[in-house]
Length: 296
Ligand SMILES: [Zn+2]
Image (cartoon, rainbow, N blue to C red; front, side, top):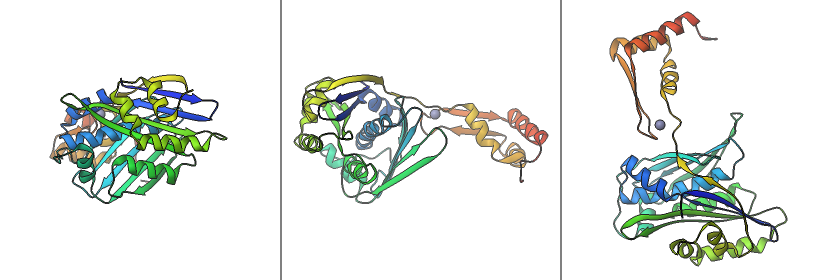
């Protein structure tokens, strides 16, 4: 499936479905962060899951999917918004566990830790909910997160399938939810179809978005809208300026005297920012001219 997010609706049964492909994105981030095979595989799943979670939010809202785990992968983080922009990183970038990829991923995650989802609204308020990780794939933790945190019955699938020599040949996620008054049995049927491998088979066969949804949740869906998904980092030199401003005027003077410059690497896109001494002195001058901050 190409990198897109599609939304489907089944009026008769009262269901909504989301399906997303993030194969290009997963292969690109593997290169960007230099991920070893198992790290890349787990991160691919996380990207698909985060894209689905973000698509459930309203305009301008964003989500952070965070995993802290006991295994060698240690953790990962994905920041995603409702417009299809994703970015993230893996703590243990060099993890490779030989053997079948899905089993290797479970070993890399280990048997403990937590999975948390932070939902940030545009007004600055946020809401976080977490579940403890068991010895399970990431999709297992996310399913338990859905049943613990959402009031809506959900069927969830995440798939990473090889294509020829490419281990991240197809990376996709699918979610089916019951709308108010919708058919409760339909979500159970979708879960059973996922457990029986219907999503993976349809994905491997090259089914388009509607075909993937209907392979899991049955016929009769209408495709509503498609949306681009892409790896985009919103970092920039202004954020670095804001970060060094937090040191205060005296802290900036100290930095100029000792290091002579400020260097910051973005953990999401590896952009490298440098503020030279002249600019740091100018920031310091402006801060002193503005006077002490309120209360300090
Ligand atoms: Zn960046």
